[in-house]
Amino acid sequence: KNMLLKLKMKLIMVIVSLTAVSGLIPQAHQRSVATNHRQRVLPPLYLLGGDDEDRKPLTRDEEPDEYFASDFESLSTQEKLKDPLVIIGLVSIFFPFILLIFFNAMGFIGI
Image (cartoon, rainbow, N blue to C red; front, side, top):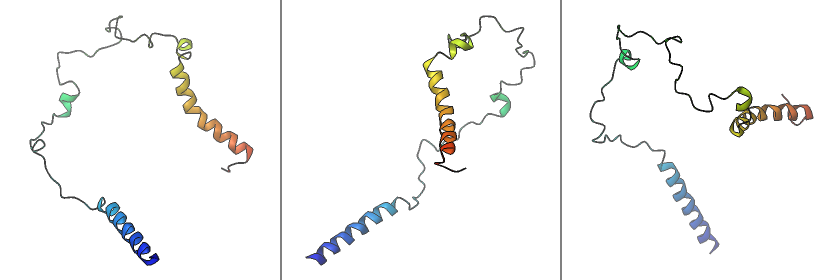
């Protein structure tokens, strides 16, 4: 009975191993019908706004005073720092470095 149990366990291990390894076997590349058409590729000139020579570039003096800005962008720096998301962002950036300095000072890690 013990030998039968070992045989079953070996069989299960072989099946699990084959299942795991089967995901690593490269599959034949199949092209779908939707990807058979060619995409139109635009030259970089058109992606950046074209080559309209009559159009003047926008300068700070020509920009209207009422441009699109969210309420958050119009806040002062002091008011922005009171926002909880800004505080969470700053803490999440600086906390790992502060923790690293603390652990290094306490001798838990050596750098």
